[in-house]
Amino acid sequence: MTENIKNEVATEPISSPQRTKKNNPSCQPFWVDALVVVLMFIIAQAIGAVLALVLGVRMPGEAMTTSFDAEVLEAADSMQARFIAISYLLSMVFFYPLMLIYQRLRGWSSKGWFRLRGWSAPTSLLAGYLLIWCVSVVMEPLSEALPGDQSMLGSGGWLLFSAVLLAPIFEESIFRGYMTGMLRKSYGGMAAWVVPAVTFGVIHAIPSVVLSATLMGLIFGYLYLRHQSLGLVIMLHAMNNLTACFLRMMDLGDMTISELLGGGVWYWAVYAVCAVVLVATLVKMYRYVSGIKCENNSPIE
Image 1 (cartoon, one colour):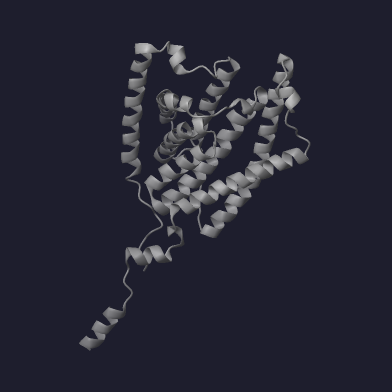
Image 2 (tube, one colour; image 1 turned 90 degrees about the vertical axis):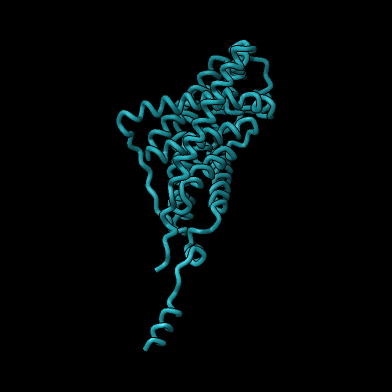
């Protein structure tokens, strides 16, 4: 009888991290999920542009963009912004079904929280907005050294529509509401914080913008994980884009912060303060998100 008991114990399945990882479909490398989202995003953008052309939405011709007439150039910027807004809207309409299909294939479920948490909402918005300015100041020397031109975005009301309304809603729903939520459940806080931020930076494509967008993605991701409010990060994203649009409308978009402050001691004093604040805040964010554990990798029974 003793030998039978020993045999039963010996043949009983043993739970282990390796066995759990092997049998849990969510345990594939997280970079695979990020790559799939990027590819779907690129494909959707291409399809959106084609659909816009099919629907008769045109981009300005070379004659308009190279004209010396201010009115013609203004019309060209408006046409460019109109094409971008409509093609972006169409691409997101196509992207969401792709995202839902991939979500079902991966066996994931998620929900986005749009609620704003009382008194913490304005405080977090202000803190996040100031941090974004710190990112702009700290990244400016590197951004100036890298190639990149955002004049292709156009101007006018269509730019406001795409940058202040469409982009914050769609991009935060994708990279925070979808990616962050899924990665948090399957891989924990660090993957949910870093991977969507890097992906968010990469899809901006313009070299001078990629790194700044990645750091902003870290700010958005932390606030989403901390407050569980998609509405909060959408509002912060919209505030950032609205500021950029306002500076373009005031013909200050090409002026650097160094030029605004006159350079010299004052600029470097502001730079040092922003760098210290940014680094200290990122360390605090790291400590918080590193304590968030995954939910899906429970031992097999």
